[in-house]
Amino acid sequence: MIPNYPELCIQAGCPAWWLEDAGKPQPCRGRLVKAYLPHVSQVPMALVPRGRAEDDRQHQLADCEIVPLDHKAVMEPDGLPVAGIPCPPREARGVYLVKKRPAVILAMPGEELPKGLVLGKPRGQTLPTFIVAPYYGADENTGTRAGYSDAFLDRVRKLEYPRFFWEKLPLSGSTVSVLRVDHIQPLGSNHTSWELTPYRLSEEAMVILNEQIQWHFTGELGDPENSVLAGLIEYLVE
Image 1 (cartoon, one colour):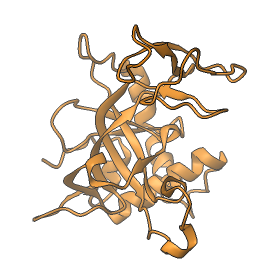
Image 2 (cartoon, rainbow, N blue to C red):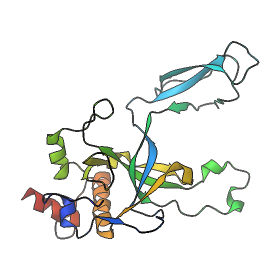
Image 3 (cartoon, rainbow, N blue to C red):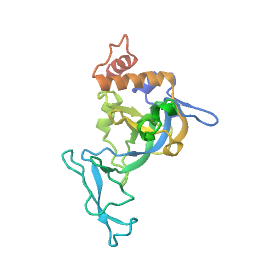
Image 4 (cartoon, rainbow, N blue to C red):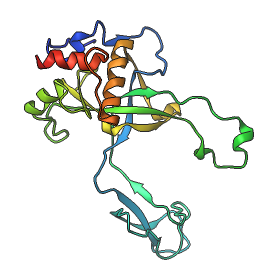
């Protein structure tokens, strides 16, 4: 269901925030999706093959180690190569903890390039992707989610930090969520990578979210006369 918002929040100043589409939803800017997205770790980890396990003739089994991926480290496999885990020079296989979470589409993939431009080259170099921003549940859930403090959420709701955006999603689960502008990331365009919901942000909501992103990226917020977001922030402060 479309959530009800308290009076003192950005969404309350918008005629319509979330819209629900009837019928089969389609990907679009502002569409709310669900996808397995990685937890961003300050120290990334890598999977390093250490050689085939037990029988050197078996490529299905290998001894591996998960190690910190320091930018100075040289991730070279030890022992015989493992066919199922190729490791080209100067590359490493990152290991991430992922969770299926809500995200909003910020940019569409665009068209695939003509075959003549990419003939003979790996498709992964030019395959299009969505650009999304993930939401994190704010409610504490023992054992699965730490949540955020009420004091922090109050400040985020008043837009004191450009990289956080307070939100109530039209989905079951956490009562309040936080959108991480600093976690904007690509998402594969193949339909197996995401699950569409019938909800999308209104055009007015996208204007505000775009200003929030620009504020985080540039560190500059327009004056209240020319910026919808700045005007709403001024209202919340007063």
